Image 1 (cartoon, protein in one colour):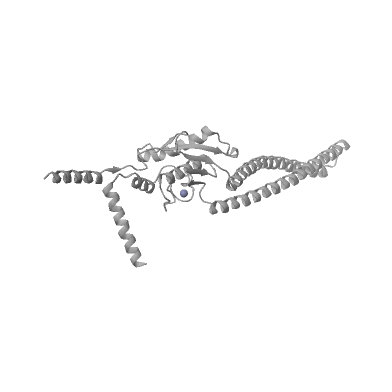
Image 2 (image 1 turned 90 degrees about the vertical axis):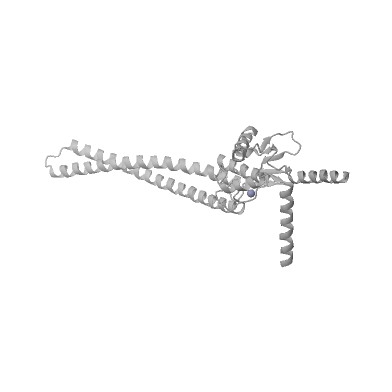
Length: 295
Ligand SMILES: [Zn+2]
C-alpha cells in the first residue's frame, strides 16, 4: 500500500501547483531609465523624470500597486527617450506665430483706438472751425488780425488732417501685415493637423527594443498623457475605442484613467492560477480548432 501514499502525495503536489497563483506584470515594478532628450524640447532630464513620475502615478493610484520605478542600473530597464519630429517643429512654429500674431494684434488695437480718439478730436476741431467761419462770414466787421488767425488755424487743421490720413494708411498697412501673418499661421495649423492625423500618437512603445520614444510635446498635460499611454503599452495594454481613455489611439489630455482603462488594467493585474491558465489555453485551443474547422 506504500505506492498509494506516494500517489496521494504526487496528486497533492499536482493539485497544489494547479492552484498556485502565477506572477504577472503588476507584481514587480517595471524599471525604466531616461535616454537622450533632444535639446529642442527645452526639457532637462529631471523635468522629464518629473513628467514620467506624474504619468506613472495615475496607473499606480488606479491599481494600488507600484508598477514603475526609475532604476537606470536595472538590467532590462525600459529606455524612455525624447526624440523630435516634424510635428514638434511645426508645432513650435505655430506656437511662436500665435504669440507673434497676438502681440501684433494687441499693439494694433492700441494704435487703432488712439487713432480713433485723435480722429474724433480732429473732427470736433474741424466742425468748430467751420462754425467760426460761418460766424465770420455773417459778421460785417471782420478784422485782418482775426482773418490771419483763421488762416493759421486752417493751415494747422490741414496739417493735422494730413498726419491723420498718413496714420490711417500706416494702420491699413499694419492690418494687411497682420492678415498675412494670420494666413500663414492658419496654413501652418492646417499642416500640423494633417501631420498629426497621419501620426496620431505623440509617442511609441517598442517591445522588441524595450523603448518608449516621445516625438512630440504640445503641452505639459499632453506630454504626461503620452508617457502614461506608452507606459500602458509597456504593461501590455492595447488601444481602447473610448476617445477619452488613456489607451485611445489619438492623443488627448486625459490624465485620470477611465473605467475602460481600469478594466483593461485589472485584467492584466488579475491573479491567475495555473488552472486558470490551463483552462484559458484549452479554451483558446478549442476556439482555434473551431475556427480552423470553419475556415
Ligand atoms: Zn498607442
